[in-house]
Length: 117
Length: 117
DNA sequence: CAAACCTACAACTAAATGGTTGTATGTCAA
DNA sequence: TTGACATACAACCATTTAGTTGTAGGTTTG
Image (cartoon, rainbow over all chains, first blue to last red):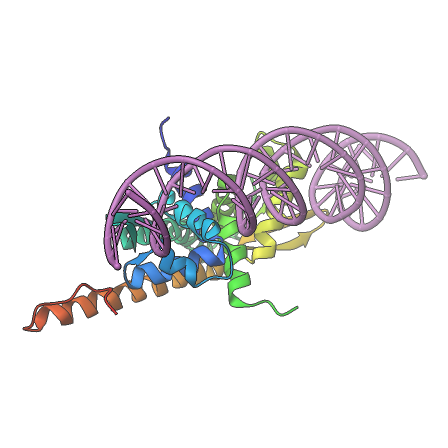
């Protein structure tokens, strides 16, 4: 099972698409928290929070380390940055389009519509 | 129905969590495309692609303008940037944590573990 | 006008998601 | 050692999602 970059992107964006998970991520980026501590903050069962933590971990957005009976979770800022890079790529694509439009406008002859083939 | 900023984030990240939608977004950031043109690129029904376009539009990542019988779709880079800003916020939270740790390390007395209350 | 084309949307299905409760296992503390 | 705590996971349920086919309306073109 090779995990492609698209697979990784699926997991990352999906993990971020739930507000509870985004909130958990904020907390564990600010500092380590046990799963219980996190669970206490939300109006849902411990198991539900634990599943959210698992989704974040599988996506690579958080890591866990054992400390006695607790599992301390910590946000991984590198993963957050990798998502930001994907968005940068999108912006780069867009900039290419603008450059192409500018090039056309700079020219003398009547600019064709950008989609003509 | 007030749409909160969390609602918006849900929609944005969810829209980005599907690889077909990310691919559509790349294309329409590079230039306008009709829904049909887009649909021709994927191995799924027109209706499926049309639904993906609808999800992207609802999230605010793309806009449509009518041109005759076609609906030309275009990527909205501002929405992409707004997602990047959310990630920046996360990184800012993380940086605060690092600063706090540094402050502790700079001090003389034995630094307590960061989670002690 | 008629036929072809582009889009939208309804209705349906299978699979994934987000929640629940219950159970099992490991660790700490009295 | 016993009991309480922390975690993991299975089984289940309701809802959402991503796909399908089919239908219908607006636009262009012959």
